[in-house]
Image (cartoon, rainbow, N blue to C red; front, side):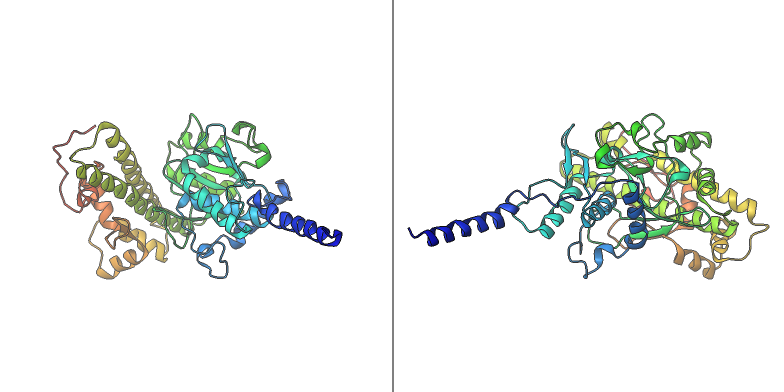
Length: 415
């Protein structure tokens, strides 16, 4: 064979090997930087500027457009996307393997171009990650250390991202919800409506992502690890209002006004009440499933998983705490919109139609996911106080919310 032809063939083969071989074992992306405090600060600034309601609904960002997510998916995606865009490593625990990890070096999609690998990686993390796995990939921090990019995790329940903190020390949060779907994210200027409660393992609460180089270290050895929030929560007996008062004082540059406090409490109450719809929906879905199988009642394990007695007690306590705050401040309170909402909510006499409409425009409680089935927040308070709201997962939807004005009676065993 002619030497020139032979050389041409060899060179062509080398080019092909380079072109195809470079993707044959390609990582999702190649990290060129290392996480440190400078990159954490860049991350915090990015979260504040870019992590908003429209992030996954922006057609100008085709890589992320219409990404399906729930609350935990959104939290993981936030950290993953920043890592990808800034060529930083992304490493989390593998929920499917006790001692395994998932990283940006995965070669599962090595035959695809980079942008498709990243989208596949996002979907993959969304499919296996959860609020339960988040507790291993994050760790608790001191209350005055909370910054944008930190998260609140209630394992098995919900998660939020802190995107900013106001001068009055109130967190602004962005979050998704269940079920997994293409949707806008939600944003509220209020603390997550939970108080850290795992006094044994410290698995919930306000937390920060573990940096990849520290992933094999115990959570207690992570920089800034602190159990302060759990000590404070225990001291105030899980009282949301008292806990968030201390938290806002720790984070604020100035004291929160009475009107600001009333607004954040009303926002949190509305969100907490609406969050109950997730649990009712899950219980009703499971009930429908077992009845198709021929069973009418839940087992002890199912009952304990789907009943909501502690959540309903907390909801009632939340109403009580806000009512007490309103009683203490109503003599000096002005006539702001939030004060009018609070007065309507707790009024002993029947409010006017205009007053009810104002409160309902601010907050209606969704009774079932995916359906236009709502009830006024005032009606929920009245039903809850009357004892009509049922925590029993075997109860029909109307009894779960107290729409039927009597206590639910069941032939199923109550555990």
